Every structure is written in C-alpha cells, then in structure tokens.
Image 1 (cartoon, one colour):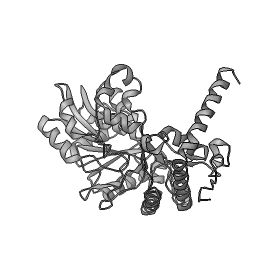
Image 2 (image 1 turned 60 degrees about the vertical axis):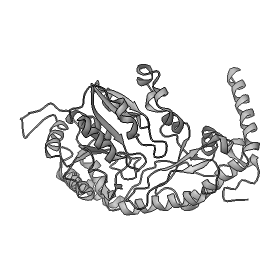
Image 3 (image 1 turned 90 degrees about the vertical axis):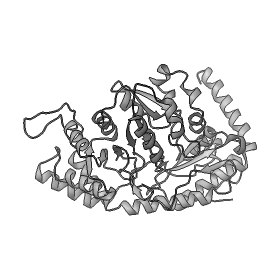
Image 4 (image 1 turned 180 degrees about the vertical axis):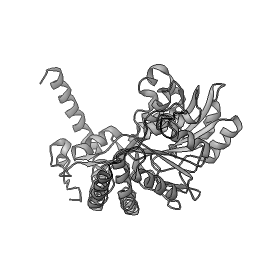
Length: 415
C-alpha cells in the first residue's frame, strides 16, 4: 500500500475503485488573498461611487505592478486578450507576424481578429518556446513583427529574438501571460521587446478576478495604448485617436491589490509543490518534469511533465484519463497546437509539416494541479499514483482497451 492507496490494479478509479481525491483538484484553481481586505476595498469603492474609468484602485494597481517589475509604464486592461490586441495595433503590426503555434489560441486570435496573418514557427524541443534559429526562415516581405511567448514561467530566448528583429527591422512583443514575477538574466519579464502583455485571469497564480495589462518602457507606445484602451479620449469630450474599451474596473483592481499582499506566499507554495513533484517523479522512466531555473526569479505556476509513451507503456491521454478518474483534473497544454484549430487548420492545412517539435510536445505534455488549493500530501499522492500506473502499465493497458471497446459497443447500441 502506498500514499495513493492502490494495492491492486482494480483499485484504480478508472477501473471501479475509490477516487484518490474527495474533491476535484484543478490545474488553475484561483489563489485568493485575505477576504476581509478585499471586501474592505470593495466597500470603499462603493462609498466613492467610482467603479471604472481609471479610479483610485486601478491607478494604485498600475503603480504597484510597474514598481514590482521595474518598468516605466503599466496600463491595466479588462483582460489579457484585449491587452494583446491593443498592443499589436499600437505597435503598428500588420501583414504577417511570426508566432509559435504552441501557445494558447488567444495569441493567434489577437492577430487574426485584426486581419493579420499569424505565421507559425516551430519551438525549441527543450524549452518549448519559439525557436529563434527557425525565425529567419519564416520572414517574408510582409512580415512586420515577432511575438514570443514565455512558456509556463520560462522566458523566451529574448536576446536572439531581438537581434533577429533588429536585423530585419521588425517589432517584438511578448505574450507574458505565464510569466508575471519571473526574470531572465536578472531582469524582470516586462522589460523585453517593445512591450509585454500580462494576464491576470482567475486561473493565473496572481489574479484580478479577470484582467490583464501591457507593460512597456516606451513612453510614446504607452501614451498610444492608454488612448486606445479608452476610446481614444484625451480628457473630456476630446477624442484624438481611434480606440476601444479595454479598461480594468475598480473591483478587479481591488482584487489585484489584495493579492499583492500574498504574492510571495503564493510563489512559496508553488515552489514547494514544484519541489515535491520534482522529487516525487525523479525516478520515473518516461516522465520528465520541465525544470525551473532557480537562479532566476520564477512564479513556479505550472507543473508541466512530458510523457514518452515508448517508455511509460501508457499514452499521455491514458494517463490523463487515469488521473481524471481519481479527481485529479490534469490538462493537456497546449493541445493540439493553434495550427490544428480553426480557422488556422483550414487556412494552413499543411502547417504541421513545418512544426515537428510543436506536434511532438503537444502530444506529450501533462499539466498537474498546483497552487494554494493543493497540499504537499496531495502532491505526494499524485506522484505515487503515477508511479503505480507506470509500474503496472502491462496490466492496466489491456483493461483500458477492453473498457474502451465495451463503451464503443454500448454507444453504437444506444445504451
């Protein structure tokens, strides 16, 4: 008997046994700071009667983020996708922009929504971030920029990317949705490229309920973005630029300010869980955890493991099915890659031929639960569950196949 409580294969929940976790464990259950502090801020907002349009909380939140990252400007937004769309437009991107396919689909949509063609570049097989050695081959006369994506708190190869961009006179933006609180070469993410875009969605380790921001050290770009996120208004009744509504509201900013007080605590919990997973999975053949560089600052937000079916004996998807049955709601990130989603699948049907590393990693990654809702003992139990599954793969696999066959027959019979 081990920590996962599985003595025989039939004890697995997927085969009829009891669930490992009484309640579902999610990959991105929200971290929430002190409830009383948050409600106190909301009460003050209601007393002031200033609910949006860059009120006191938003101004304070922008200042706190800028100071924390060491950047000149933070422009808070209603969400990360709108922030990315506005940053793209403000930077003057058009035509074609080179991006990785191995990212959340919003990165590509933010371009396509504005009739800019995302050109998918393959990733480095080790880091999972856009491969700078392949970028130049994707550049055409229509290329105006590069958007790098910092993956799971691990920054892109920014020096190489920006060197290529300078050579070809291209703009560089970064989707930093995963990398708030992270550094590269001692410099905080937020200081690279023309601008970087943050997400404060509820599933991020640091959230504002829903929200995002653009951070930049470019005064002119910041001024343009501030105009664009507020309909182009410069003072009362004075519209001087085309814009939209991208503003963060006061309640979201209040949640951000509340969570700032717990930022180090959230990171410590994530780091603790990362160490527990790293140690618990260290001896498993065919499962490799994506490591963090602990000489840099990191948010340790994601626990990403790569499953090699040739060595585990069980596919990535079989392992996820086993975990889900136990109430461990692991995820596939980023499956199947933007190039295999619509409309890109129809627009670029053969893109996969140029993205072998993307396709390989998208078929192997498993994201495991972490955050303040996950205790060390639960991490250890999950690791033991994976050890048990891999150690008994020869027994489990035929039973999973039989189960799938029976389910398929039942479906055909309408049972």
